[in-house]
Length: 448
Image (cartoon, rainbow, N blue to C red; front, side, top):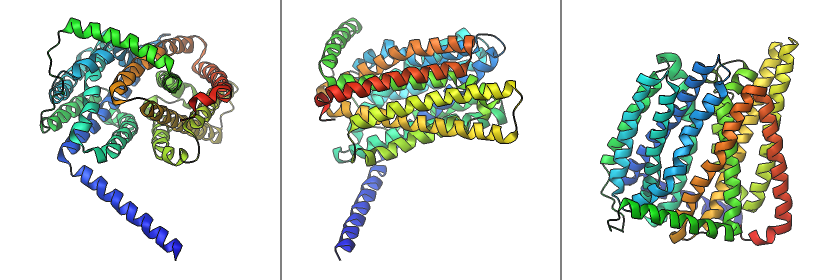
């Protein structure tokens, strides 16, 4: 009888949750914002993949292929170093609806520039830089709009949907790029992503005016000066609290790893799977995205049984071992190719091994990212949260810049598999060092 009652209570809880989720989706303003996010996120990921593939193809017969791809990846990330903090300040003084609308229109127009300049690497990098710079204004305006459009009781579910969309868009965008290129040619992704950005703008038109509470007009120079002062104070504030510095370090390392793997993905696909990246998405891109989504799903189960610190520490060790095994797989594949020992069963086994390893990498990245961001949210206030996350975004991209660039240079010199193996071992040393530090200083992170 008691078991029946417990099941009944659980079923009632599930019905209540489903009803809440339906009521959230019936919120037209949220639905329009979410629809805009889905379109713009998928468009951005599709564009990123198409550019990586295209630049690697153009530079493939030179010794600068991996460096060229690394530069493209950096052109996505570097704008946040310069504009993320400043954009966040401006968003607090502007109508967020206008920011979202204009940002989507600008991105939709800029993407069409690739049609004219896709063979010019300098122009490709410039366009990517401008599009990413525009995104630095779109992202904080989007995040700041959720509490305005959604009741407080639905905020958790609204943010969960946005995080899920962010990871799912990676699968859809990267997975769709290959068939789009194969069916309609290498220029088709530019037309498609432009259309998606402009349709996303139409969703924004349906939103109400969203002016920030602060309407004081501040000149650009004053905003820049205050931003610099805030960044200095934030740096000291973050350094003084281990509950902030620890997760920021983990996020920085994990995102740098993702950036390096993304920059080397075209060369890895050719070296290990012997096919272009657009023909290997089922072994590289889709498993990584599935792993990230699984991380979103599993984190709720894991945090009820383990501390978030333990999840991060173990996740880093597993990610390091997995990255090392991915590099070793590439080295063994290269040796087998030299000795012409390549039966079909070996090629299939290598492909499946790569897919499993990439899935595990995606899973670990998802767990590390979510657990770290949760710790940050738990140890910041409404007054400091935006500033801390703005600083985080900037620090992550600063720290990821050099590894991505050096990885591209080394891959052209000594081979992509050796570089990935070296990075995996380097990450393993860091992860084991973190484990030792946690055992010694874990009491200072007791609430995480």
